[in-house]
Length: 137
Image (cartoon, rainbow, N blue to C red; front, side, top):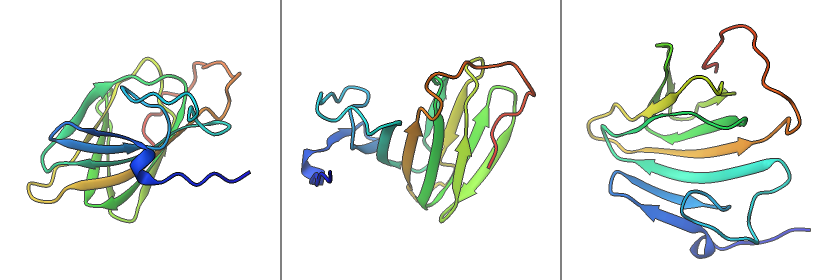
C-alpha cells in the first residue's frame, strides 16, 4: 500500500534556531495514524541555524542515519570523539545508551539542512557491552 502525505499535513516545529518537519509522530507532534513505518520510527527534515547545536542527549536503542543536504555538521560523543560530515555525505551510528551525543552547525553563516532517519532495526535485541566504539561513518 502506498500513502501520499502532503508536507502541509506533516508535523512541524520552529524554535528559531531549528525548523523541522516530521513525517511521523515526534517530540511534541503526535498523530496516531503516523507512528512510523515498520522499523522506521523517525523521518525528519531539519534546518539548524548557523553556530547552533543540539545539546548532548542519550538515545533509546535505535540506529540513526543523517544525510547532510546543505552545510556541514560536527557530531560529538561524551567520550570526546568527533566526526565532521559535509554536504552530500551521511553518517550512520548506533548510539550507546550510556553515552550522550550532540550535533553542531559550526558554520557562522550557512544553515545546516539534513534528513534524519531513526530505525529500530533489531527491536528485540539487547544492548550488549562490547568494544567502546562510538560514532562511525
